[in-house]
Every structure is written in C-alpha cells, then in structure tokens.
Length: 269
Image (cartoon, rainbow, N blue to C red; front, side, top):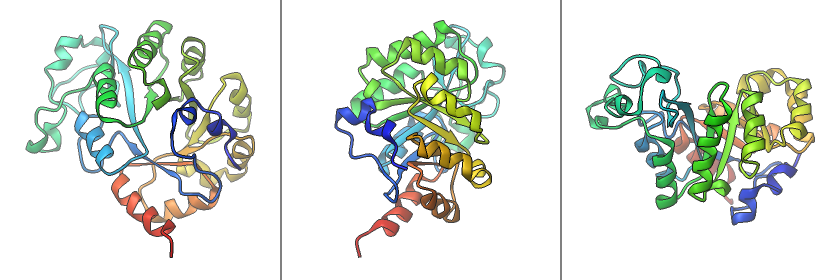
C-alpha cells in the first residue's frame, strides 16, 4: 500500500524527510493549527502546531467580499470572532477589526482572522508545511488569487490543497498544477477512484468513521497508490486502528498528544 503519489510529489523533490509507507510512523497533521489548545485557524494556532513538531498544519480557506483568501473554517464569523455575518459580505477592512481569539480566553485577545498572504509569509519566515482546505466551490478567479499567492511566495513545494469540491480541485489542477491536491470525503466512494487520475490527485482523505465503515473502499485507494490523510482523530484507539490500516497522515486537534503517542509507539526498544 505504498503511496506512489507521495513518492512523486513536488514536496518530496524538495528535501522533505522520507514519506511514510505501510507500517511506518504516519505524519502528524495539526487540524486548524493546534486547535485543542489555541484558537483555531489563527497565527497563534499555527505557531503552536509548529512548536510541537507537527509535520503538516491544516487550515481552512474562504474568500471575503473583496475577493481576498482568508483563514477561517465557517462561512460566517459568528462562532470564532466577536463579530457577526457572512464572510462573503464582509470586506477586508471590516474583517481586520474583528477579534478571533477573545472567545477562547483573554490570553488570546488580539488574534485576527489571518489573510492567506500573511500565513504564507509566516511559513517563509518560520517554516512549516500547509494542508490548505478550500471550503466549498471556488470561482476560477478566487482559485487563481490563492494559487498565485502560493507561487509568489515560493512555497508550492510546502503546500497541499484539499477540498470536498471536485470543481475546485479541477480549477486548481488547471491553474496551479504544481500544487498537490487531495479529495476530501466523509464516506469513501468506489466511484471516486476515477478522480485519482482525472484530477491528478496526490491523495484521498476520508473521515475516521468512513475508514471504519468502508475499509474495502479505503484499501482500493491505498492499493491504487493514493496518499491518505484521515480526519479528525484525537483518541489513542482511533490512532491504533488507523496505524493498522496503513494511512499516511493523521489529522488531529491534539498534535502534541499524538506526537507523544507515536514517540512511544515507534521508539526503538
């Protein structure tokens, strides 16, 4: 079940440590940054994920009313800021005034909804690799804007894009083929195998529940050489099950805890 697509990926040609194969230690992928400890999708969460040694840092992308790609999970700002309303109706200036950390405690007051450009600048300055989730169906112009920033900052070899949207992944393939891509699913589908070649995908990323319920379909994708990063897994029983499946990355809200588990699990005796 070795992932041939990982072996041939752009980031593997740029000096990344050897990709995990069957039976190897999987990559730790911090979900929305270190979101169990720090307000999700903020620069503080990205910093915390970097500090505990996460192999990849997953964040979410939406677009403002001004067409600017920004890092936030929901289509509204209500849950994770002190503001309200649909992101698509907020201009950049209005968004920049919102506090994205105070909801999690006074110690995080002053965190903002980061622009993708700001995040990429941080990656250039401080390191890290990004798993960027494009939320929903993006227009060609919006995809070009986001992909253009990735290319402009010279980090295409440190970025993987993922999305539930086939149309968004098709645009990414056409506009920025150098940025690796993964298809997200809650439940794996056998007919999605066609997309591995059609969308020139690096991998196929199902939920932990999907892996448990449709193991045969999962094995079909692994057998076809796809990488597989499974979401969102925070408990040792889940980690142990997925190690037995042979997946390549674990997307977790608990990257520090997962690192400790894997250190013990794979430490030389």
